[in-house]
Image 1 (cartoon, helix red, strand yellow):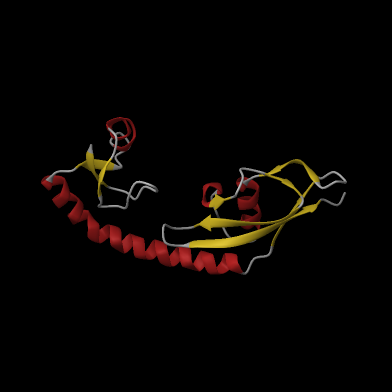
Image 2 (cartoon, rainbow, N blue to C red):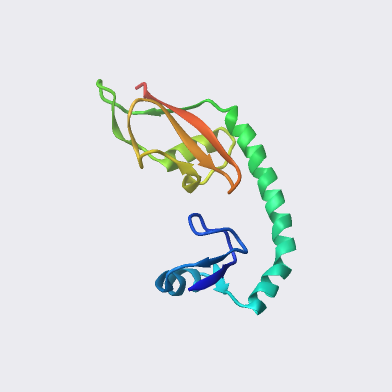
Length: 150
């Protein structure tokens, strides 16, 4: 089914693109969530009218994301966790714990923006990960998982 995307969808296309997706994906996800419209001339004109306002919002969002990226690059993030003598954590470090640690440093992030290689970190050590702040702005950061001192 050919659709006109109203929002950028990772792995599918950017806002304003005409994409060909499976009927089920279109009917069950994209159309009910108002993420896409049927590809018609009327909908193309309608989306063109919304384009200017969207582009202005995107410029502001990109600038804001770049500022946050600069702030993140200056942060040395350390997360203390309870661990065994062998370095195994009692529990695990999740994107939510990392996002909370960034919030304590003054940078508000959503856990969904943090892209760990695996879902959870279960060992002491240093780990690199990506933070996707915007479609065009991605920053790499590190976290040091250290044993909690009791």
